[in-house]
Image 1 (cartoon, rainbow, N blue to C red):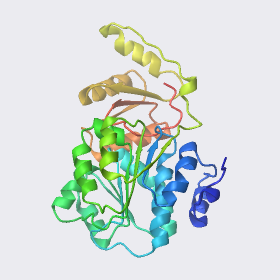
Image 2 (image 1 turned 30 degrees about the horizontal axis):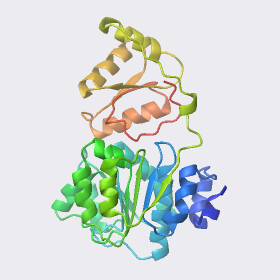
Image 3 (image 1 turned 180 degrees about the horizontal axis):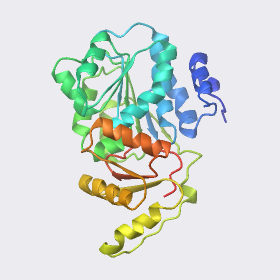
Image 4 (image 1 turned 135 degrees about the vertical axis):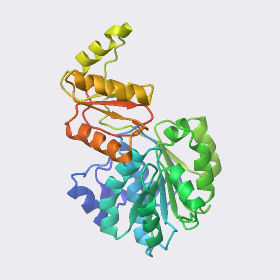
Length: 315
């Protein structure tokens, strides 16, 4: 089995960036997909959050654009990465930026919840790799600020979550605006019927790889169901969330997430909430607090937390 990125075909300059960040051994999904993706093949990859999917598409995107040479022209990105949430877009950008910097390529993000001014300016200057949420990207295209006619590589990340969130019609419209002969890669934790529709329509003889992280925690996970009456619910949650380690609590509604985080904080459990009613600044601050350990509990709606990777969640 291949144990380094160079053997998989990753260029030395990008391999050096990975090594500088302490990444020397490919994960199973990276080892499986990189030879095909670097060769320009359409690809369908299945792996759960945390399996290393981001580098599995970031490396071929940067390597292939870099090898081809040329500059991005105004409003016409050369590569497009679509993701379902703002947090995931930001997470992908953080991973890909050191690679694009090393290759002399420009990367920018596009998502809602923030002013579009900086996004419009960046597109006007020219963006090699555009990482975007479908809604805001369609808005900018509608206003004439972006054109997908020069996209050479398209990536769809967390495709199953796109389907869950109702983004598939927008995704179909966006993919339909990219050139047919370009490379297309689709990554998803599950490969179901909704995803199959996209694959049949937009991918050309895709190679399929399924791999889960060797570091998968699932084998060691205990599942418990607690039946509690409504009036005891908060006391039980406080007790559970007070234990050492990070805790993630999911709620059904945005209002529920906000109210529960407030109650946990009142009870001495440092908590932050994550949901669609928060401004982008607040979402980023709260997630940073959870990452750094300032807050030990994250209370989120399932939609807000899709695709987010946080290490060492105990409960």
